Image (tube, rainbow, N blue to C red):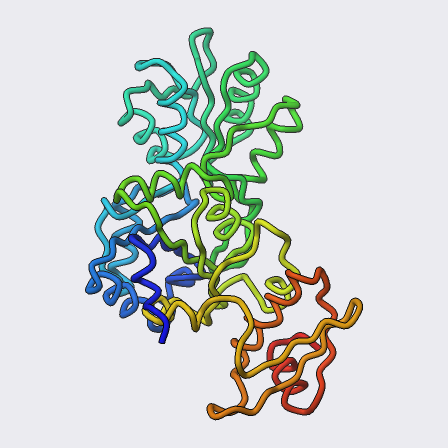
Length: 335
C-alpha cells in the first residue's frame, strides 16, 4: 500500500472558490477534510487571488461555512503584491493603489505609503480588484505607468465568480491599462509563483501541496512555484480540460473533491491504473477495461490513466474497446 498523500507534503495550500466552497455554499466534505489535515499535523494555508478582502474577512467567511480558519492562515494576492513592491522599492516609497482599502492596508503594513493620485514622487502602481474602481482611478494609474513606474497586478483573472455568474475581474481592468500604456505588469497572484511561494514560506514548507480546481491559475501557479498539485473536479476543471492540458497545466494528482487529500498518494497519482489498459496506436489511444481481482477500475482511475497516456503520447483521441470502456468514457464526457 502506498504512503499517505499527507506524508509526502509538509503543508497544504488550498484554493478557495471551487475547492472549499462555491460562493456561499461549502463543498460537501471540505470542513472535515481540512480538520483531518490539521489532525495529521500538516499546516494549512488558504490561498486566494481575491485582492479585495482582508485575511480577517476571508477567515470569517470560511468559519461561517464550518471551516476552521484563522486570519494568519490566509494568503491573498494583495499580500503577495505588497511583498513584491517591498522587495523592489525603498521603505516609505509612495505607491498608487487601484483597489480596495484592504489592498492599501497590505501596502502600508510593509512600510510603503499608499496614495490614490499621481504625483512626481509615486514609485509604483499596484492594481487589485474592487467593484468601486472608476475611470478616474484608471486614469491616475495610466499617467503613472506611462511615466515609467513599476506596475504590479495582484492577479490577471479575467472574470470573477459571483452568485449572478461570471463578472469582470481584475484582469479585465488590467487589460484596459495594458491597452492605454503598452506596458505589462508584474503579476503577484496565480498563475505566477509569488503567491504560492509566499504561502509556503510562511509555514516553512519545502514540499507543499497545492489543491485547486483551475488548471490555468491553481495548477499553473503550482507549476511556476515548483510545487506538486492535486486537481479536483468540484469546480472549473473537467475531464476534457485535464485530458488536453498543456505542459505546465498538468497536476501530479487527481481527485473528485478535497476529501481525497487524506487518501493514499499512489491511488491519486496520475499514471497507469491496474483496472485499465491504454494502448497507443498512431494518433489514437485504445481504451480497454481489465478485469482483475478488484474488478473493473472506476471512472477516475480511467481518467488518471488516459491523462497519463495522452500527455506522454501527445494525442487525446480515445477509442473505447468494449462496453465497459465505452460506458466509463461516456460518464467522463470523453466520447
